[in-house]
Structures are given as C-alpha cells and as structure tokens.
Length: 404
Image (cartoon, rainbow, N blue to C red; front, side):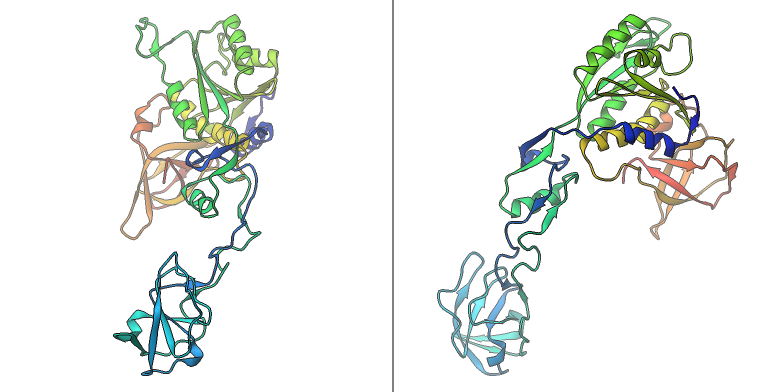
C-alpha cells in the first residue's frame, strides 16, 4: 500500500487503470436504451434521404426549360409519401410538397412564393438554377457511414437517428452492478431509533443517487458496524454479486478503521492520501474481479470523492469512450479567497450567469467538510489550485458545476 500523497490527476489515472470494461453485451429496445453505452459501431444501411426530394413546398420543374412569365401546365401534385406516376412533361410543372420524391425529368424546385397560379397553369416569377431547393439522396447519411461509435452514451438524438434507419433494438453493454455500504458503529439507519451516541447515516443515499445518474443497478448492503468479522463477511459476499463496491468510512487511520486492512487481506489495495480538500483519504482495491472504492466517512468528503473518482471509474467500466474528467467552466470571483495550499480545494459555491453570458462565482464563508448545507445550498465547486495561497476578487477561476 502506498502512503504517498497523490495529486487528483495521479489518483484518477490509477482509478481508470484499475477499472476494467464489462464485456457482456445485450440487445435492448430503443425505448429502453437511453443513457446506455453502445457496445459496437452502428453502420448505416440506408441512405438519408433515400432519394432526391424537395426541400420545400413549391413546383418541380426542369430549370433548362423555364422562362419567366411563361405559363406551365400543372401536371399534378406530389405530397410526402407519394411519387409521380409519370415523368415531368415538357412545358409542365408538378406541385410538390416538402419531403416528396423529385419526379423524373425535374431538376429544380421553385418555392411557391415565387409563383403565380391561375387554374391549371403556373407562372414562374424567378427562374431557378439546376439543383435549387433539392435535397440530394444520401447528402445526410450514406450507406456504410458509421452513424454512432462504440462507447457512446446513448441520448435522445442518437435513438432518433437509429430509429430513422429502421432499427428498433441496439446492442449495449450490460448495466454495472454497484454495491453501496456505510461502515461505522456510530451510524443509525434513518427511520430507526438511534442511540444517544449515534448519528443518522446519510452517505448511502447520496452516493446511490450520484451513481444512479450513471444508469447503474444499485445494491444496498446497508450499514455495518466497526467489526472485522462483519466487514469481512460483507466484502466477500459483495465480491460475488457486484462489479463495483463503494463503501464510506473506515479508510482512515483510526483504531476502528478496519476496511483497508480487510480489503488488503482479501484482495489487493492501494491506500492513498489524495491531495484534495475535502476528501483526503481514498482507498482503491480489488477482491477477485470486484473493484473496491473506499470513500471517507465525512458526508461532504464522500460526496466530493464520489464525483471526482468513483463516477469516472463507473463510466470507464461501462465502456464509455470519453468524458472521464469533470466539466469545468471559467468564472469571475466576487470576493477574495484564501487557501492554505498543499491540497486542491473544492470549495462549495454558487455560480450565476451575468447578462452578457459570463459566469460569476461566490464561495460560501463556511467550508467545513462536516456541514452538509454547504452542498445543498451550492450549485458548483470553486476549484482553488494547491499552489495558490490566495485569489483576489475579480480573478478568473475554474468552476465545476454540479449540472449544466
């Protein structure tokens, strides 16, 4: 086990190296595929559009035969879903609706606003050029194009694209099974009667909510007291049921902090001090093929390390091809900030957008890692570099939004 203080980048690199991608693939309905990870490239088997078609409502004509003020016979009408029975005749025009196939013999569409209609005749007021207002076959998608790459997290726009190709199922990686447990004899489950020396446990529901946003199957292992035999039995059971086990508490250096020693005994562990605040203690290991992430017991520290280190591991294991690092935006400080340095400080703060579209950020006065209201009242982390002793009002700083 390493006792070295790691930078956030070093810790994240170790996490990603230990996170093995699941290999099980399953076909599922497009209606169930939102937020799932694509397991293989999807290749187009249809051209889009499938034929030359009109880009707007108007008249299909042969541009080479059109003269302004020359009446053309309206040969018929084509709406979307129809096609012309016969090719376009000379000195004729076919009324055509947006999306309808271009009839044979036509090479342009004149928008209806540039025409005058008189019974069965139409006068073209502005001579079109060849190809005008026509969407050519395959100008959007051609057969053989890679539509969506393996490792993409599927969203509504991807599913609409797949459906437009006539697909109703897609192959995705199976969902990750993630176990959640809180350790500590001082913890009582919400909804139960707590002892005078206990506090109500809050980390499991928070971590579970964070990881459910990644579309995982959560197994709640409850609360386990600080007892070596109980913890050993729990982690052995979890290693047979889940791909990832996330615990909170028991990874520091206290007399009752057994978690890291048990994981080391049952498998392998790299115990770190990560140079971030809050969230210094973090343990990474494996029992058989189950990845183990040990978070601090402090609720705010647990929240921060789950966001910064566990979520990237989950995304890597799900087969996602990118987005392992959190999103940062730049914002202007509204007040001076002091920092002791030595650790990257993720200060709870509020960010607001100004009228010109820029962001301003205001950190809370209270940054104690034991104050949960600093999370519920915040909408971002103000990130203070470990080498910065202070930041003046007006400085441009990186901010990590909780959501955008």
